[in-house]
Image (cartoon, rainbow, N blue to C red; front, side, top):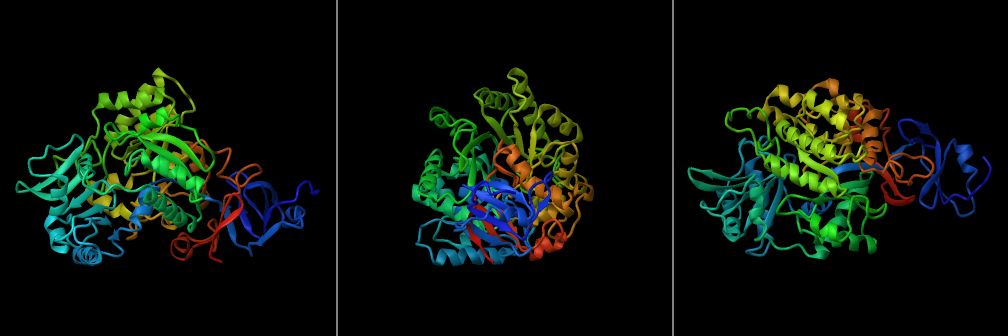
Length: 541
């Protein structure tokens, strides 16, 4: 190889996975943030000049920076300041309440205390905490306790009072206000959670930027260089767009972000975005407008995902339909006709049915064979629905880590047959649907290793195997985490592989993700180096 250009950076002496077609190489050269050459150590080192930075990988494994294709970046950054009550830190109701009490003791009287991450199935009580539980834990503070799925919040008496919620409050369409013996028990699900918004303190622009920066740095520590923020506007409305732009200008946007605009009727930021010219594809390679998100149901673990068959032990409960069919059709067609890519939330088979039908109608009226509308989660999908997804050019966008974190919960609420068949990612691979993966953080941790483990084994955290025929090979799992994440964002020409002309977004790990066992990946793997556009942005060597 002759010296055509002096590389800015060379990585050598490693096992660098460039992509599913390109395979492994030893070395890679970067110029102006992009890959200019890959190959053997000898060939690539020919591009070394007097100013070239050289990194010896020492035999370590490197791959394209991971793409977390569905998380909530601002919410993740904010949740890092909330009280964590996930199963690993609060397995009992008593422990959960102790953590809330401890936070209240260090919080000004009357100020809000917010906690996140419980799953009632994993609690020792097996049921949701109640308003009275939270009253005992923090009698002098308004308290909100959010379930891990984000679709259920428990409020204490002070929080309900500040929000003006009483036994006589009308239940919003697509929502649930929980009552026991006619009295509020504190549970608010899906659209009913919006009743709390007016009472909560409004996040300042600086707080939003801090959350973006904090959450983004957290992602870099795992080798994640790109993400989708899955509901921009959910916390602070259109102000979140301003916060993202200010973060980018100030150099406080650590990762590439694909913005998904909240499009729910009554809470949409699409009109403001449309007037500002923020259409799908607008922006640059650090911050780009992606699609529009509409919620069509709730969560399976919270028993609010919209199913065709009832939940175990609740013959009258098939979940929550968030939008009537005619409204879903109208909203999705409107956004489709304006040119937006759609990335709608549908977990239960009935919600998936509604969404596929709305997509089919919109595409029939205004064809676009490469729009790449997505189904976020797409958990309880049928074989016949998969065929329609394929025919319509729709992409499934699951979070396979949910099997690791919540698989046993799914079994308890929908039974083994339905739970084991959920999120059939290997089927989607075989069908050529290019499934991606993500974490849905803060619902699950953005830590990619449980996600990779679940894709490769279909094992829950408790060791239950959920249909091993849907397990992926290590390379397929990496492909979902890199190439297909970029593809579903229409960015496959810019990132997702380490080939000439693509961004040098690179993650380096202490274990070989193609050769290590799934258990090693889960328990003994960490990211030691992360590069974004050829710059070292995380180092733990």
